[in-house]
Image 1 (spheres, helix red, strand yellow):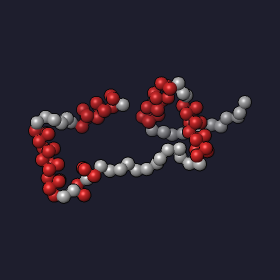
Image 2 (cartoon, rainbow, N blue to C red):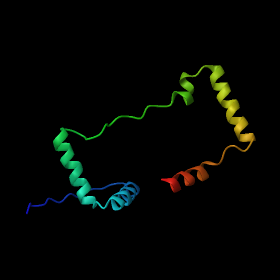
Image 3 (tube, one colour):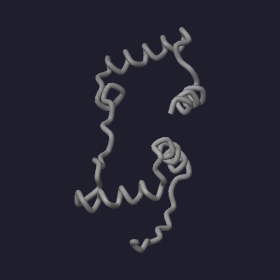
Image 4 (spheres, rainbow, N blue to C red):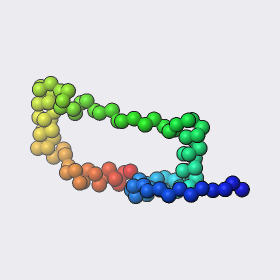
Length: 100
């Protein structure tokens, strides 16, 4: 049998918990998943997935909008607010967390 090496890692507890839930559903222990990840690094000669910054959504970037586009967005937001088509951030985040 192969010898084993010990890794001591510090990770974000929320990230770890979410990963454990997924791995549990897959029937894969965390140690096996980490071993798989390290093997893939060796096989592909780098990180086995794309590591890039997310593309920003230019439709809500005021720096690249014309004054007219910005005014249109503000008016739509105010219209949504006055017609109860919005919710507070805490409620929206809680609903998002329940789904993910």
